[in-house]
Image 1 (cartoon, one colour):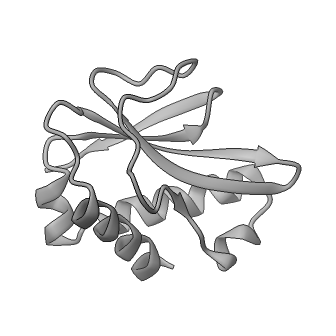
Image 2 (cartoon, rainbow, N blue to C red; image 1 turned 120 degrees about the vertical axis):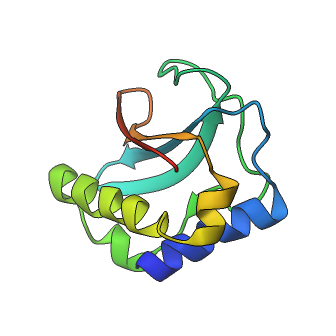
Length: 119
């Protein structure tokens, strides 16, 4: 799954580089019953939970992964996704493309947690 997630992020920045003004990247999910959808957006300043993001990728907005869809339990899902995010940023290209960006994760319009700043 880590390779799929890394490839997804690489595809995003290849097609739609992150604007310089975006300082925070948010990996969020929405729930529809037990189904969860993971997506990425960005903010010029700190993330605002109740509003739309300043940046959405033009293509590949959602991470479509059949394996990830099987994890319904919120705590386990959160742990898996946080691990995917952390491991994917060991990629040198992603480090360069996301350099200095603050990374957040959480449920859309509910809760976001700061994870790290890309160095």
